[in-house]
Image (cartoon, rainbow, N blue to C red; front, top):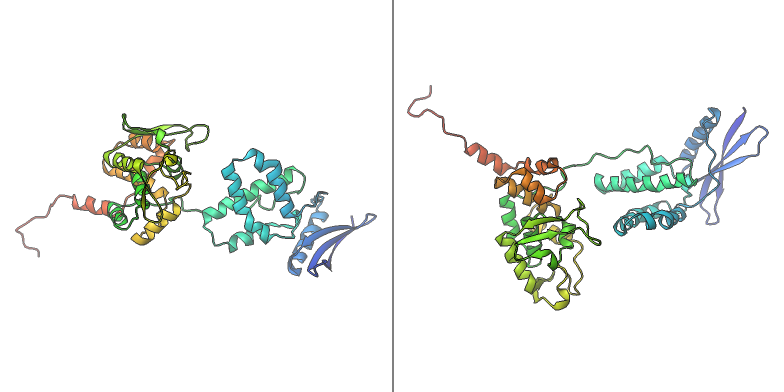
Length: 366
């Protein structure tokens, strides 16, 4: 079979230069493959790839649906995400795709190649964890494009996830925690106090309501119901120690705010333990925690780090790992042991200082 592939340049109505491929086969009408806003070098690479696929009999005809990237993103939300994904996941999709809609503006879906995604990921200043989240969203999006016959193959299918730091946020040592108490504001103090004395995840603390507290039994219910879900999908109970109980009793009558004032709690503020002035729950504590960590001169600690601090303190107190697992709400003991076995310099120093003195006294050293 005789086949030739040519590059043809043209200009759009906005006077922007574009390239397309002309596929010419014997006794067949010419076919055109748009390449979008790519360089001449990339157009040449595409020409060689298409020619090779044609000669080897591996070329797949481009689908007849020629949607622009932003058009397909709208279709993706209307036909899939808005139906099959939760509100929080849809928000994450919107946030992750927003810069991509700018990057691939005027690109048709079939014009986005693997090297385009690779370059975008490489140029991003986000962490590898965030980059992997973006890749995961793109894999879902492009797989739907293939499934709905808008693409022949996904440009991200063969892109592997980047290595991540699996440790995440670190826990705080007793000395670091003391330095935090020295700088916290009236608003940050109850957040940190509740987290390090209950082991609640940030989302669980955000959803904590006054009706979840059993004052007679001295315990908190971390609830899974129709509107609130824990990570394990089960309700668990955490006993209140004296510090936690005292802080909750204070919060029952008072409401600190981010301006470092304490006001009397009003009736409309009695649904959520931590709420705004209008009574709505506080959805995120990251800004408050980051501010406290910066003033204390501590790096590597996110809101989740205080949950780890709760577990680490249990380990220092000699609490059995199975008990800690139940309090933390971990699905497996391995998750709990991963925090139990994190050793800091202070623990190493205490271990060495605990060694007996076996030196011989009264003998000269020669």
